Length: 479
Ligand code: NAD
Image (cartoon, rainbow, N blue to C red; front, side, top):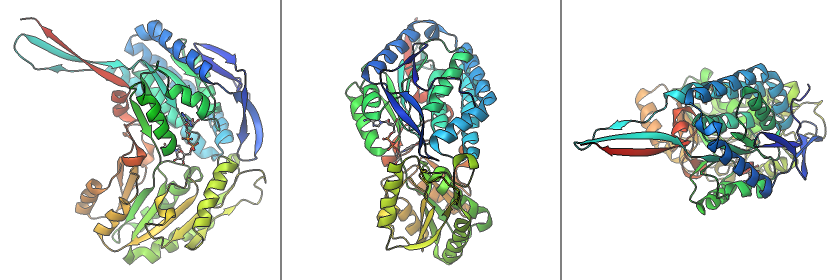
């Protein structure tokens, strides 16, 4: 596949340019370095923020909403046309199975279609007020927005954050993750083709401690969207606070699925496993904890174990159930959790494909049963293909266990009891609750975000358009 961008260049103010330093881009399926990417730092971020500010003072800032929408729709169609290439770039860079990368590329196109179509349907209100007054509210862009993106779902996360920010008329500075920057660059090139004016989207790859920290603490940005770890989220929020910049934090999770004895187990079973090992478990909304009512506990564990017995980890392009982990460091991190789980009951493990290259960061998926809720494996986000199963005896105990971590991203309930569905949907601490499903196809339309250590703010759906804009109240006295 011929790349339509130079991986060593970054984009500022409509100009692609080479950086003074570079970083290696590794293929996690083989461990081989496949490209050099730009290593931007404070100077490049400065230039990007200045270019974004110029874009707001120029054609981008003056553009009619419908025209912005047309550009986003065009960009969405270009993403669709190049979806196969984008998927192969993403699969190679992240190590995710090709089918998943294809779904990610389609999701990016859908974000652009959705937000492109929403631009001219998002408006303020008039507010009834005192005699002699007319009061109205205006939805306005923040200005220059910063977007710090992780390596696990670059295409999707760019869609949900940059897509919504551009729709509302902000000018964006995007800092992709050092482990997976290629699809961000590919996307930005398509932005040029779609007719995004210079400076509306700027992309500066680089290290978190360099380009990332420079962007988070930059006084020229007016809003920051961060997706990544809790530790970095704290640092980013503190840096933004120094400039009183609002922050959306999409952090990790330890999301539970609650399976009651009256559940339709035939429907539930595939949903219990797939979102736990998707992207090799490197998903913020991974189904990390499976809580099962005691009456069906042995059956659920046995049936999950049966599925695990068939799971294979292998090279991304060979499209197995899961790919490698992103890096040797991530594999070592997950390995430390497996060490911590030595005393636990290992219910099942999958396997690594026999022909998986030795340099790749493969790890067989692991299923632990009878895990005490306070155990480190049931409390901390592992970010690898590891699930824990925990029995419960009552609804109250299930809720206590489900809510018993510092996180609150998503949760699901498997039960045919309607009263319990709504009672527990309210009782669970999570930004999204699913009833008899999990993820619901990842809907672009569905507001997403966490509570507690999973973060704050919402992306996706119309909610994101509110987050990526600010409200101005205009009160006019006319007598
Ligand atoms: P990370 O938080 O270190 O990195 C995420 C992004 O932040 C990258 O672009 C990185 O370069 C940047 N960054 C790092 N340090 C920075 C700093 N000081 N200032 C500004 N930016 C900085 O994440 P990671 O360790 O690479 O990823 C693994 C963890 O991230 C997982 O354990 C998981 O908890 C979390 N995660 C969450 C989500 C989500 O959607 N909620 C998605 C991906 C990863």
